Length: 76
Image (cartoon, rainbow, N blue to C red; front, top):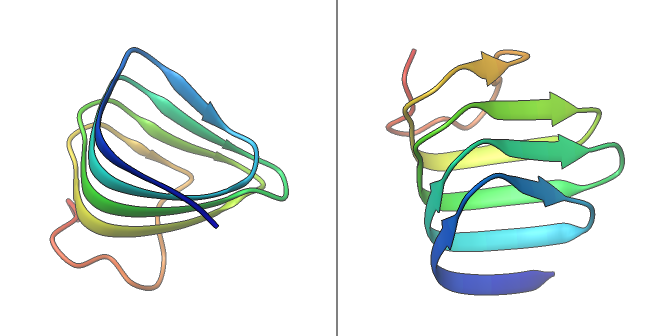
């Protein structure tokens, strides 16, 4: 799994297994077959296009589709 720390400015598309320790300052799209483990914050929408999302933090935008499972600190 690829792991990064810090901040991503602008929209992001996730196509692989990715762990983010920090913040996305834009929308995040998780494409089919991809995995996102977020330890931090997403300031835009979190859009699942067939990928898997684990949000251990806060998502300030919409969850599309709504997140299920582990959502510590995420907006209801």
